[in-house]
Image 1 (cartoon, one colour):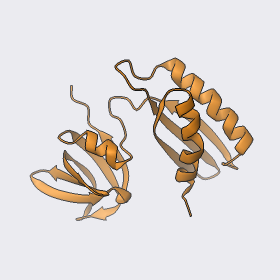
Image 2 (tube, rainbow, N blue to C red; image 1 turned 60 degrees about the horizontal axis):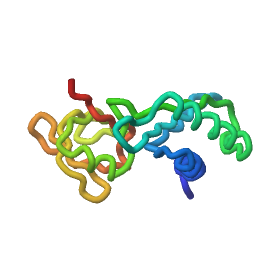
Image 3 (cartoon, rainbow, N blue to C red; image 1 turned 45 degrees about the vertical axis):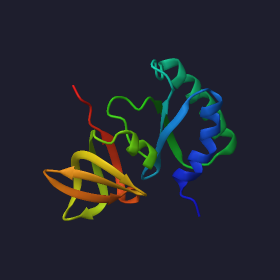
Image 4 (spheres, rainbow, N blue to C red; image 1 turned 30 degrees about the vertical axis):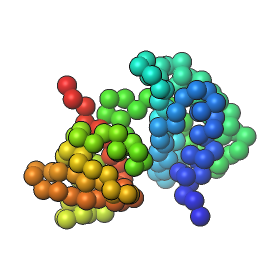
Length: 153
């Protein structure tokens, strides 16, 4: 059975793509009776996504959610660009940033810790290889709760 996030992704992706954007990823967060559906969109090309893109996607997804009603409790819909500290969701996204520094948090402790910040060395199937303080760590993407690119300034 697909998770709620996978169901929402399958429902929302065609709408985002029809608006000539890419569904970079989404987060479905619940806290008590309230939820947040955070959608990250991107746009190919140098200009990337703008405020108008976010507004168009928000209106269309909101209408879709009203019709399909996949979330039964109260929720807040947020649509934004991934930004400079873009979250990473898929093996392909991780692979695009090999050599960059990423920060991540695992769902459960790995080697006695949950937070890692280091250089992304490789993507091997559904795992990522990070160098943290000179030590290599191989982590399953499924075990990662949240991962973000660390912007270079």
